[in-house]
Amino acid sequence: MRIISMIGARFIQLMIMVLVLSFITFLLMKMTPGDPIRAILKVDDVISTTVDEERVMKEYGFDQPILVQYGQWILSVAKFDLGESIIAKRPVLDMILSRLPATLALTVGGMIALFLISVPLGVLGAVYEGRWQDYVSRWIAMVGASVPSFWLGLLFIYLFSLKFSILPVMGTGTLAHFVLPSITLGIAMAPMYIRLLRERLIATLQSSYIEAAKARGLKRRRILLVHALRGSLIPLVTMFGLSVGSLLGGITVIEILFSWPGMGELIVNAVMQRDYPVIQGYIIIVGCLVVVTNLIVDIMYLIINPQIKQGKEVV
Image 1: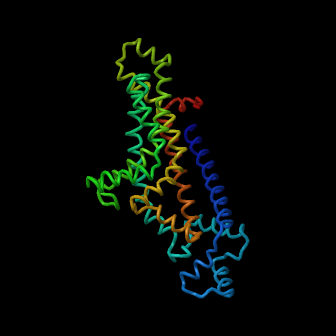
Image 2: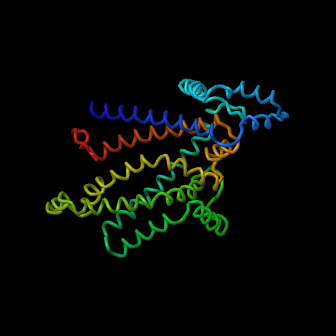
Image 3: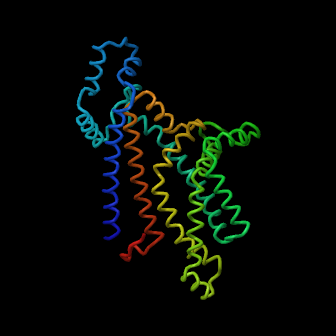
């Protein structure tokens, strides 16, 4: 019951966060420079007049107070209706869902690359603290944190696609198409995970229960993988839940760089064209993804650290 109540409470908190985020985004969009009315009239190839502008404002409800506009929109969202794009004249939900699978697939690929990079390097730095392996691990983390992801992506494109023709650079279709964008995304986020895992694992290896495990004659590999690493992964799982929003935001650059058919191009065009319904739909979908991901992280947290089941608080 404690687990169910905890998950329910987290879900309510995160939904409130999504609601607040959507309201703030709605207000900021109304305050940004640019006129979506003129963008609509330009798409329709209509010579802009005051009468035309007033007609379009009334048609899309832009003549209503901001709170009324937001209330009408949030009621539509509750009915799973994100409205219609004012530029493409298509349902926003259909536009987003058509590109969402590609973005999620690349996100999964980036997370796999992230853990394949950060976990071995973090463990290497902790186990061989102060030795050359530790210095190599920290040097890689420092370089990864210093290099912009778009520059790294361009470097990979030049080396592996243009110079040596090893991997494809654009589009989707095969697993090979995932390699470069996934590695680029993973390297961009790996440094903070490497440092966190290294520091946590060093502290865990010096704890009393690890010393007790050594005294019982347990093998070094078992102590590391079963006892020390399991507890040290908890901060990484927590950080992953907190960094999902940054991940989905940063993936836009990678998608555009590698011509990945995800939500990146869609949202960039929507911002440039002041397509408010698409921007609002994107924010609410990403917010819901963050909510779901954080719930999954909470469940993983329980699996990795079963002390919560016993009613203990875990920081």
